[in-house]
Length: 122
Image (tube, rainbow, N blue to C red; front, side, top):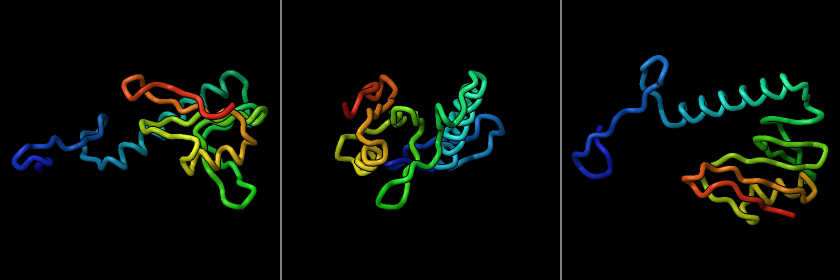
C-alpha cells in the first residue's frame, strides 16, 4: 500500500487485540462502542439510570426524525458531543440538538490537541 506521496509506504490499520487489518470505519466504530460501553457502565455503577443520563440514545426531533447525542442529560437538556472536528451553532447536527433540547447547553468535547472542549448555547 502506498500513501498520497507516490512511493510512500502506509502502515495498514490493525486491530490492537487480534492483529487483523481493519478499515478506519471499523476502528472508529470499535472505539465508539468501547467508549459508549464504558460510559454506560460508569453511569450504572453510580446508580444513574436513563432518567438521569442517556448515552448514545435517540433524541426525537419535533419535526420528525432523530439525532443520537453522545451524552444527554434529560433533566436540563445538556448535551455532550465528542468529536475531533469543529462544530458551530450552524452545523446541522448542532441545530437539531438545539431544537430537541430546547436551547440547553451543548458542549463539544475534543482532545486538547484538536482545540479542546467548548460550549455552544446559553
